[in-house]
Image: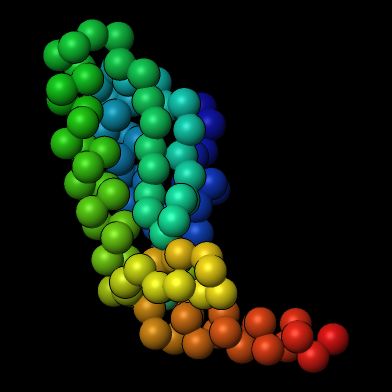
Length: 107
Ligand SMILES: [Zn+2]
């Protein structure tokens, strides 16, 4: 089975693992997991309307949780803009990313 949590940062791995486990356990097939504009996206196929309706809130809940969880380290975070890229980060990881950019600009 594909490990979908590798598609997102360390901080979101447990959110993705748990959601994927519930979705596949219900009979859905995951087609894609990714971060977009700082949000968590989980795409899946459900074999029936019942399974789709069961899965929709699981995906919504995972996305809501990811919205307030730092994608890099998993502590509470928020959607921030790092040089035009929207990411969900805590203050520390946000600072690290800005520092990375400064180092990059020095080269
Ligand atoms: Zn962090």
